Image (tube, rainbow, N blue to C red; front, side, top):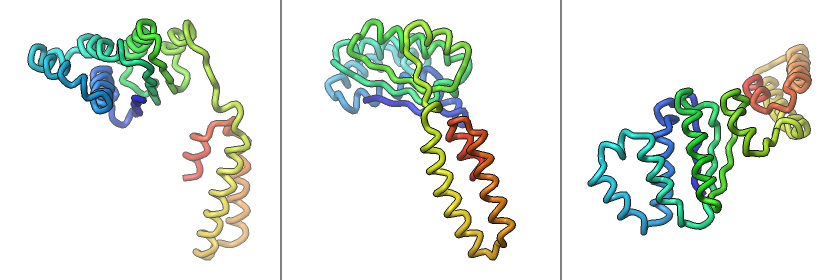
Length: 186
């Protein structure tokens, strides 16, 4: 399994070049027999290896082509640098078309550019539509901890009642989105 967790907080690491380089390094760690290929690419094509999205994407394809089943998890594709987002998605989908054993899992928020490509060849799973119970459990545990802390600090019943009202508001408005719940509770 190879994985990437993209974040808007580190746009440099979310560029297509860095993503493919990371996937290559993870693959090399697992398949040491491929290290000779990278050494050769480094000697013959150093500039492209460190600066060309297309070269590194093709190199990754060459490396995974005959490796058997490989799972790639890309979390937060919508947080990749906007100019790289579509290139990265199209490249990965192209690789899965060539390498039938490569399985790609992508998580992202709705993004019209990504949705247009993903709708052509993927099945969308909405995780926020079936987790209201999980959010309720999470908020109840957070509320319990928060109330204990506030009691230790001398909070009165009015403040504690406001905390419960806040939790109820979050449950009513989160629409299954735990991120919304987490941000509000922190």
